[in-house]
Each structure stands twice: as structure tokens, then as C-alpha cells.
Amino acid sequence: MFPFKTSIQFDRKCNQALYLQLSNQIIQLIKNQTLAPNTKLPGSRTLAEQLNVHRKTIVACYEELLLQGWVESIPKKGTFVRRNLPLLDQEKLENCVAFDMKKRTGFSFYQTSVLRERAPKKNKDFIYLNDGTSDGRLTPIDEIARTYRRVCAKKNVFEHLSYGSTYGNDTLRDVLVDYLNTTRGLHITKENVLITRGSQMGVWLSSQLLLKKDDSIVVGNTNYESANSTFLNQQAKLKRVLVDENGLLTDEIEKLCKRQQIKAVYVTSHHHHPTTVTLSAKRRIHLLNLAKQFNFAIIEDDYDYDFNYNHAPILPLASHDTNGNVIYIGSVCKSVAPVFRIGYLIASKEFVDEASKLRGIVDRQGDALLELTFADFIKSGDLDRHIRKVMKIYKQRRDLFCELLKDELGSFLQFEIPKGGMAVWAKLNENYSWETISEVARTHKLEIGDWLRYDSAKLEHNCIRIGFAAYNEEEIYELINRLKKTITEIKNK
Image (cartoon, rainbow, N blue to C red):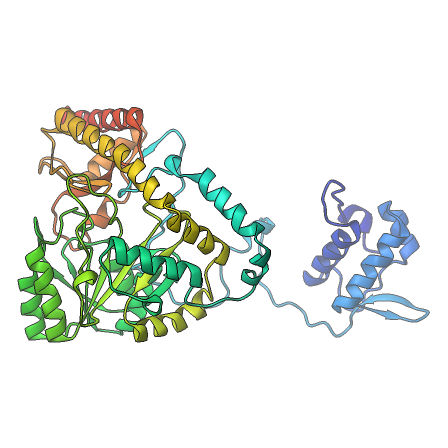
């Protein structure tokens, strides 16, 4: 007789009913062949006495096992493990606990070396450098929460709880048409707008529709690493062109176009990622003319349009596009907080229609309630008020960060004060390397991060992008202090 009394364990503090705990354990005993097919289970009274539970618990357990097909009941004989259950063919794992059994797969699948983990674990005692992210502590969470509650309190809210349009919520699309036409100088209608979960989805959708294996896309010799990974995942060829103080060298793009077919050009025209430079007016017009002449798409990733400290925002390429060559991508993630995955893809109707079909098979639709919330947040002027507020704060942080960087580390680093955005492009003296600094910095509880992502083209420029917006004044002083300690320690070795 199998020793049920010593083999079955109940957790009476658990929310799961006792009969389900018992049935799950018996199923596990059947699966691992401890209870073989045709094994007779104890009667309900007998097992209830052994396990010190009510007989109804055993009856409910056996009924559950019967419904699931693990056992069979034979009149006047009892309950048996089903005779025709196939044996589970599995590898014997020795000295292994249950949660370790899911680490290996029993099948083949496709892997890629071009994608990287995006969310490293963090230690609260460390300071982590970033690419230039907003400060979540400045997020107008109370205003957003009130708006969300107001949306949910409306009588027609239930209309938005079922499946909706793959284009995104109609109200938000209408609001974005007015907002982008006013602030970005666009000339669009709702049919040109696809709501996405952040700008990265827009980049991915564009790559899927534009690029096949061995197609060529132009990017800067320094470029946004996530975009590079997206294009390489499509097995496209990256054609790199130089970036100087005026942005992408469009003359090089023209030379490339005369030699081969270019399917697209990816550009962060406002503040080039990672160097922060702005694409000049002359090159903007040249690039648009090249797109028309050679029939390629321009993927314009306008990731931080709102943040300019020395002048008004420069209108995007999309505002000058009359030929349907520009795919304009943006989001509220940078302006408000990355957790709010609200973005947009602006393009010709036929491209938006196709992107909507593709979005429908990977995400089906967005979060209608959140989209309605941000439609109200934008239309009420709350977004603009938030941007004006944080602009002042980020400018102060930029000024302090650059001042300390120059005063404390000016002999080790060179940089230009960025006119906008949330980060500085810093070049390290040739006597030092970010690899060494990264190793030593950890001893001072400073994490540099994946510095190699800035040099995927093997330019050996010895530069990285350091964000400043996410740190308050005290944190900026501490960051610079830890970085100075790190470099000084290396210098004195």
C-alpha cells in the first residue's frame, strides 16, 4: 500500500482548496510513475482517516481526477489509476528541485545574437548611468490617476472593454492629429495615425514592412543600438554613414544610392542618438530630395522632440514631406514616463493600413482606457504644462551636470553641452578606456552599463552617452564624485 500519509502535504494557509492540493499531488505521483496505471486508490473513508481531512475532501478530489481523466471508477471495485495512460517519457533528473526543471527546453528554437537583455537587475546602493531617461519622480501621477478614474467612471466605459481597433483608440487618434499638426507642423488626418506601444513598436513595424533579408538600410556610424538590433534581426544590411556636428552626412547617402538600392534611412534628426547633434536644415532638405529621387523611406525617430533648452523645437522632416517618404515615429514615454506605453506611427494611409494589420497579430490592440486617459491628458493641456515644468528642471540639471563634469573631470573627458535632450555625449581621453572604468567603477558602486553598445561599428571613438535628467542635484554630485574616484584610482595605479 502506497504511504499516502507521509507523501501528501497540505498547506492550510494556502488559498487553494484542500481537495485541489490533494488532486494535484496525486496527479504528480501518477506522472512520475510513483502510482502506476491500474493502481487502486484507497477508499474515501480510509484516505480521509490517513490524511486527517473530511471524507468530502477525498470525494471531491476523486471527482476532480475523474473529470480530468487521470482515474477511472469501477462499480463495486473502487477507484483506479487509468489503465490506458501512456507512460511519460522524461529524463530522470537527480538532485534537482522542481523549479529547476524548466531551465532547459526539450525542443529546438531560433536564437539571435543581435538582441540584448534590456532590464538588468539593479542594486539600490548603486548609481546606474543611463542613456537619457526622464525622472519618474516628476511624473504627474496624481493628474493621470484622476483622469483615468474619470474615464472609468463614464457610463459608456464598457464600450472600451472589449476588442477594439488595431489602429488604436479613435479619440486619441483625433487628439493626436490636432496636437501634432499644431506642435510639429504636420498636415495629417486620422487615417495617417497608428497608435503603438511606444516608439520601439513603430520602429519594429516599419522594419517588418520595409526590410527583407539582405535589404540595405542607412544608419549613422553611431546610432541608436535598439534600432540597429531591430534591423539586423530582419537580416538587413546596415550601411553606415558618418555623423558630424551637423548630423548624418547626406552626401555619403547620395553616393550610396548611386551604387546600390537603399530601402530606407533611419534618422534621429532632432537630437541624433547617441551624439545629441541636430541634423542641419540643408541636410534635411537634401535627405528629403534624395528620398524622392531614389524612392526610399525615411524612418524619423523623433524620440525627444519636446526637450530643447537653447531654442524652440526644430520641426521634423515629416513636416516638410509632400511625397509620402517619411515614417514619423514618437511617443509620450520620454515626456511623461517610460511605463506609459503610448506612441504613434505617422505615415501614408496605405502604409498605416498595412502596419495596422501587422500590429494585429503581435499585440491585437492597445490599452483603450490608457489611450483615452492620455487623449484627455493631451487635450486638457496637462501634457504641455508637465513638459514646461520638467523642461526648467532638466535644464538646471543639465547645467549643473555639465559644470561639474567640466570642473571635476575636464582633464579626462571632452564633451559639448547639449542644446536639448537628456544626455551628454562624452569622449574619454585615449589614455583610458571605458572597459577599465566600468570594472573599477563597480567597486565605487557606480554601474557604467553596456558601454560597448555605443561602439557596435568598432569605431573606437571612446565615447559613451551619459544621461542627466533622471538625477536630482544631490544625485548628480554623488555620480560625479564616484566617477572621479574611479578615474583617479585608475590614474594613480
